[in-house]
Image (cartoon, rainbow, N blue to C red; front, side, top):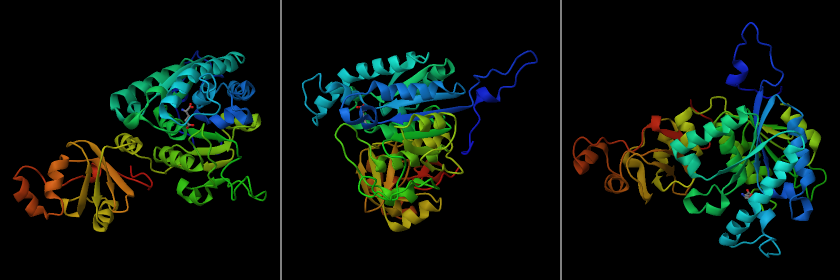
Length: 393
Ligand code: GLU
């Protein structure tokens, strides 16, 4: 085993005197993400043979619990609706996803049935991740499926995913899924063998970068290949790796075209580019904060405030330059600099209108402006998570 594994409860259980160690006792939990382009190849429709090779690789290692995150709903549905190519209009994409999701599941069902495994459809939206109760419910449901030996096939619920509840790309959805099931590794499978030193389409001498301490180190190697049916590219993969890493989950970016590579990953071996996880992952609450997307509000702060919060000091009204969006006391909002770069997010202690009244003020002026009993801290370090850095416990 070449990457550090967290032990799962099931593998830590001690056996009673008369019990035999079952060969199927799970040793690891992995999330395997397949993009539309990978599942369709050049044919622009789902390729059952590709899916069969995934199923064979998963079935070959019963000690691994696998969750598949599968794109391809739109790719599988657009032709039925009379489109010559994947549509761009949002409602056409939603309609295509509604048609294609059933087809996608039916093909996964065939592929896994052929190797004696059952599958389950799990459709998530961003509010399954932002709403703590839904998050816990989704997490329990997924674990129950895995414990029952079923392979969950996860996709975004594209047909109803609009605006604030959209995750938007399946790389980030896969990272969220990895945290939902507390996976040992997130494998983002693609049509290149890993993160390459040069553009694989134009530079034959380019090589796979075998490992990186963080996703950030690899950003310079993003050579974006765009296609309409899939949202992801190397940039979203690195974003997803960063997200998973904050929760202590390493990411592999590897080829999904090669069944041997897939089988190796399922056996717990490394392949492609391995991106290490934070050594000190975020605790549960901070992790939940880091996972959220599409926050409704933000505070624009000055450089002094950025430096202070990076040193784990409180965010004070003095450093707040502008208030963006709407929020209530207790909401999770972003802290950004004047360039729009997010540095932190956390639970705000005032409504937007009150922050507007006290921004730029010194502590004693805050008390005068709001009256006693209000406190003067906008965001406390223990209710804040820094963005773009290793976890902080
Ligand atoms: N959920 C979309 C689909 O199944 C794909 C999103 C993505 O490519 O990241 O078609």
